[in-house]
Image (cartoon, rainbow, N blue to C red):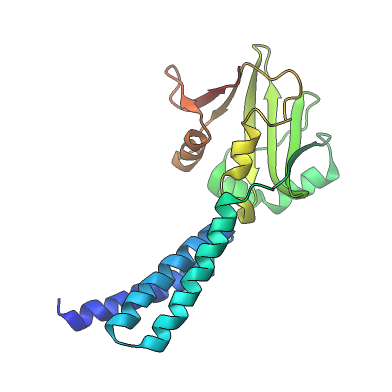
Length: 212
């Protein structure tokens, strides 16, 4: 492949990254892909000696880096757990609104059934409902997570890290001995591992994290 074709390919890759970045619902992914596209365009513009384009992409990359730093290192976010009734109208409307994402990508087998023992709680991030956790406490003092869903704009793993941390108020003053979930697919299993869950030896689809 000659040099001209390589240069042209770099330009196409940069353009593709920019286009993909603006389709992202997650702010974190938008910034990461935007940064990658800006840096790739910077390389392309320097090769073809298009210095005005290079200057624009230097500025764009700095902006993306600044916002990424804020997203990753921000410490003043306030997380709260808001328990709602299992038959809450808002809960049902929320599930209906995000049904396609929940069943199409994350937990295809999930079907919500409102029972007296089910725990239904929204995770508020800066007082905005950003995530939903549904589960049930079992007789063996474990907690089964039936749904752990975060809306696209907040998928940077901060909510999950909070929910399964010691600072979480999800379980009140008497946390269960462990929390477990059944992985629906590889993406779900990967998410559970990132949250600190470990695969059970007796059941390959079950992932568990000990709280005590």
